[in-house]
Amino acid sequence: MKKVTAFVGTASKKHTLYAVRQFLNGIESQGDVESEVVVLSDYKLEACRGCKVCFAKGEEFCPLKDDRDVLIEKMMMSDGVVFATPNYSFQVSGIMKVFLDRLGCMFHRPRFFGKVFTGIVVQGFYGGPKILKYLDFVAQGLGFRVTKGSCVTALDPMTEKAKRKAEAVLKAHSARFLDRLSQPPYPSPPLVMLMVFRMGRSSILRELDETARDYTYWRDKGWFESDYFYPVRLNVFQKAVGGLLDYFLARRAKPQPQP
Image (cartoon, rainbow, N blue to C red; front, side, top):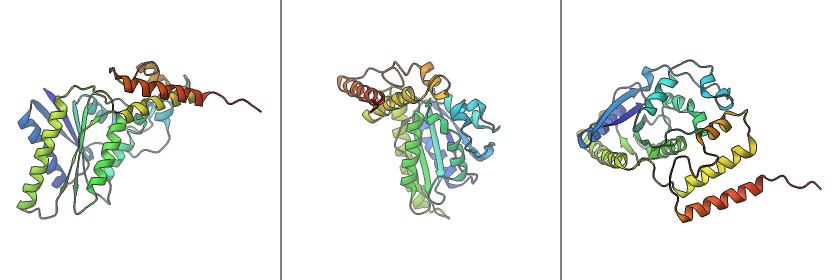
C-alpha cells in the first residue's frame, strides 16, 4: 500500500480542502493508497530568521523550536506528497511559504528522491498556473518526481457547474498521479537534472571542505563518486554529457597562473 500525504496551506476549511479531498478520494478509489491530510495551520511553524545556521552546521541546529521536523518526517514516510494552497496575492499562502522557507537548506541537500509530488492551487480568477509552476520548481529542487498538478477556480458561492468542472479536473489529476506513483521510483534523470547534479558537485568540491555541512552531506551520500543522486544506469549520451561537464568544470576550477 502506498502512502500519500497532502499538506494544505490554509486554515479555511473550504475550497482548497474540498479540492484536496476530491483528489485523494480519486486516488484511493483507483489504487491501493492510504492518505493523510495535514493542515499546516494546525501545526506550530515559525518564520525563518535567515540566520543560515541550517546551511552552515545542519538543520538540527536551527534555533527555532517548532513542528518543522514532524512535517519533514511525514514527507519522508510518504510515497507521494501534495502541496495545496489557495492563491493569496498571486502567490502561495503565507503559511505555505513559511513551511517552504523552513525547507531551504534542503535545496543544497535534497532528500526526497523516489517520492512523487504534485500541486493543487485554488484561485478566484487567475494567477494559479504560475503558482503551480513555482511549486513544481520547489519540489524538483527537493528531489521529488513531479507530476503535473491542477488549478481549480472557486468563487463563493461555488455553483454546481463549477463543482462539476473542478471534480473532472481533479479526477484526471488523480489518474495522472496514481500512474506516476506506480512507476519505478528511480527513473533515468532528465538531462537538465543531470547537469544540475554535476554542477552542484563541482561547486561543493571547489568551494567547500570538511567544515561545511553541505560537503559532509554529499560526501556521506557518496555523491562525489556517483553518476547521480540515486543509483541509475546512464545511457551513452548521458555519460558523455556528464563526463564533459566534469571535465570543463574541473578545468574552470584550476587556479589561474599569476602574471
